Length: 103
Image 1 (cartoon, rainbow, N blue to C red):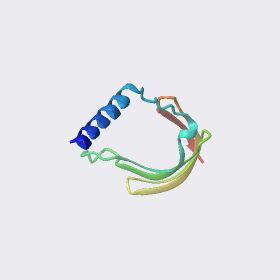
Image 2: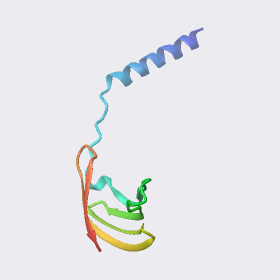
Image 3: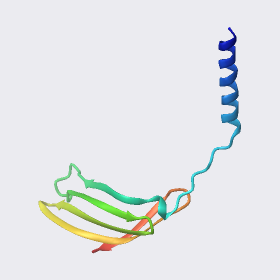
Image 4: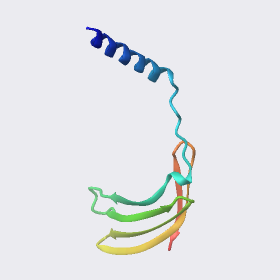
């Protein structure tokens, strides 16, 4: 009986501490995004007159605001490959933006 009561009190104390302690807010910046990431974009519609499009690639972020990448795209049975480079920014709330140009 004593050990069961002891466990219940321990759990109650642990939960009270977890509720009372404030949560640490995560802050983000350019160093939060580092490494290689794949991406896939597509535009497929039921309309035969609309240009169907697909792109697959890899972006590499350096953790300091620069991004490079490569891609393969398909549009109207035409396959293209290429590279790009640019910059990125990550705001403190985790939202980011990329500006790139063909490489």
